[in-house]
Image (cartoon, rainbow, N blue to C red; front, side, top):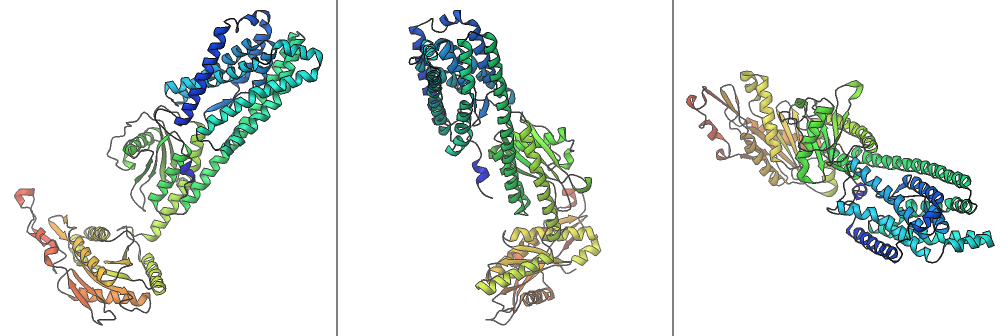
Length: 631
């Protein structure tokens, strides 16, 4: 799976929320400098904010209402900021009422929106450190007010009024110049802050700079109309222009939100497509769980862990497949998922892995839980649970994404079940004969091309018929399962163990010569002997006979010839009166079979002398059935 999704996981630094230390330091410096400048300005003229208001109360209230309404309809940008279409209102206030009222309106409108965003974040469960939230609250208002106050040193209402009396073109140029003087420094400083937070230049240009500058340019005529309405001292016209400004802002916001919704859906489809490709490229259920979990953790930055629960079926037992941001949280994530499945979806705890555990949640975390339905309304194939961080809330986009990926999980689990049923034996969980034969042919062709070696073990379970006759087929099944466990414990992950049929197993050992294969066979026979179990008053100690052949050492002409050689060697091992025999097929050098008996000391014959007495276990063990004895 590519690392694209993994790179989308947002930076999570303790103490700085979703921001980098460089971004926090930059914002801190700008905020301190801007606040210091504004404080010095107000100390030099304490009446700066209030004096002009006495003569222009109606205009001030109109501009203030317009700025607050525009700012409350601000557009979210870059994940952690917002962009309001109120710059023209600020410029109109500066050029008509003066710098003091303009600063007042800026602070009221932007601080109000900042507090609203803070409260909404807390309600959604997104908690930044208090000092960082306070810093972000004052950053935008202080910076905008400071830039506008610097412009107030150059332009004034008197100068603008005189320009409007002389020539309208000059006043338009002055309005455009003042707007550019506010927008360009503000955008430049804001873009630098976003870039320091790790947002790529391409994203900034496409999502912030381009749309933002065009929007500001589109609202310049409306702002200029406000100044004309003020000049004419016509409250009705001023109110009409203000209402039109709000309506245009609302329409622009709706268009922006529709555009963002389409972008969000495109991102979701991209995540789903990439996850679908990743899960379709494997039939390993553990890998399927890992890839779905990685996709969701990358797409939902508030996720703490993902649990794909596979239900019990003929393909295997129920299982939890867990991915967590912090490995130490895996156990808690599983318990939170179990608790949600039981409480929200009504899944019995007995149907889940570790069904005897109490269904409680140690985390105060919201969980998105979805069932993966089977075909035709059958029992669920499993369940998908996304555990969010404590204190967060489930939002619609997160649930929608989980629903999309749950469909991918349903398809992947269905394919895994079909593949498992087609390639694995239901009793032992080992590969079926057809699969082993196909792998033997592949290894034979590879050996012919590259000259590599591989071995084939043919294994026969001793006295299976006797166990079936004396203790029933359930005991025989248990014997086969014990042998299968011993085989799996003795081979590598790259080896191919399978059930050949009846009481026979086969193991393909890639990239292994016959001497190494013989050692594996001896270790396997010894491991199988350790898998004793009790049936009634009898103890069954398994044993196996093994025939081994190798390519190219045994010089087989084709895969079928290799299988015949290993089968012949097994037949020779079975003719021995002793159990635990390993017989090698003739090689091109020796031309004769080699018999190897696993030494008695390596086999668990001692178990026969360690049988508990009636006094020790409270029951009489009067019989010992051993696959090493011919009885």
